[in-house]
Length: 263
Image 1: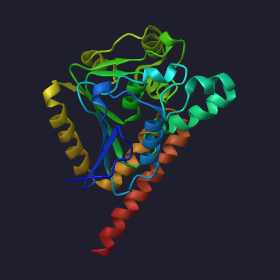
Image 2: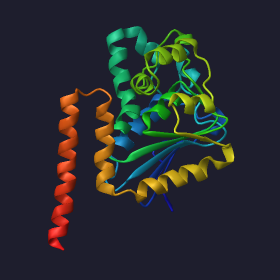
Image 3: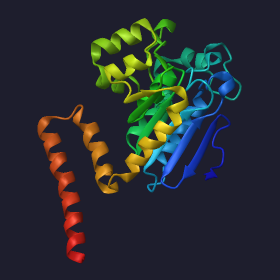
Image 4: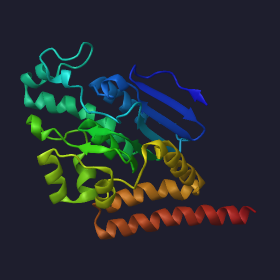
């Protein structure tokens, strides 16, 4: 196993064959997030090696991520980071433009050809919840606590989490979760579709590894066609989705047939 160069002081990136593990690595702050981390996540996603087949998003320590570093919302913010208060004071339009670059650290994972798995334990609040939602699959520990707390601060989730949340649980439940800011535990997360499976904390890594192995065992070309096909099914018109299905199948059948004829 080789450890990639540190891309951010609070982010660890490890490549092992076709698997890239991206770990939030600031456990003494419960992996609180900052804009520079979001920009780094965006860079990682948009420059992902095409030979990477699975990405694992995880957090060091007892919490996946407690969300935005609250110091960002104080006047002056965090040294070396975007001054959120000063940015917002200038204009609403300027704030929205700046947030667009932050969103890429979350939304870009849906666009990579690799399957993205989030291994989530402890608190996954706000930006932490939205990072888990940025993954294609979620394995959670039985102590997980999902929560969207933005509304309680007079804000809304703005890091790409609203679309995946509504797609998974529906508008009514998404509204209730976001408006109340309540915690969603492991059993409820599985029951409503937020998580694929919940396991004891000490089994989280092993279960995630097993899922990664199963994904790697699937035929690579088929899996690369499957991810965008299923994601498009959420909002595509029926005829559009049918076209995408047959085009993907055509490419796969052509590849298989060509291989057989070469043999």
